[in-house]
Length: 100
Image (cartoon, rainbow, N blue to C red; front, side):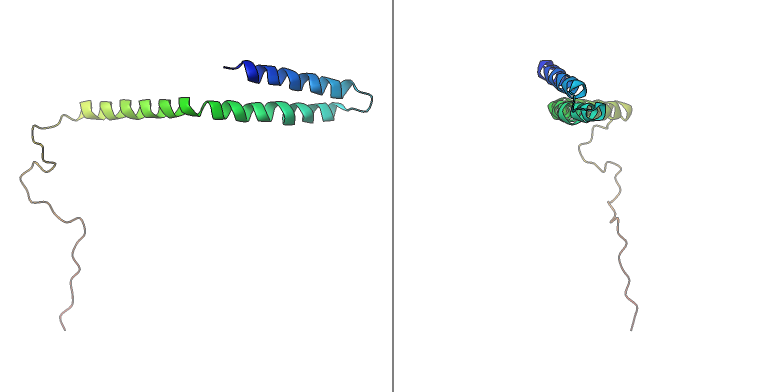
């Protein structure tokens, strides 16, 4: 999986060495060549290739948290969410009108 990024880094490294050893080249130009042609594209490709793995890890973590929460709070045999026998209340208080 990482063979292509490693090969690309090697090619970019050889390009930067050629830039540094050329009579018209500079070490600063070699550093920019390595960073702009090597590290940045490879970093972007590896980040994009790792997206499915990160999504799987997030889903697995959420599933583990959900299972831990279910084990921590045992549910009753009732299927209804309001098993207390009390009437459900409106979460928003009604607005009173002033008498005229």
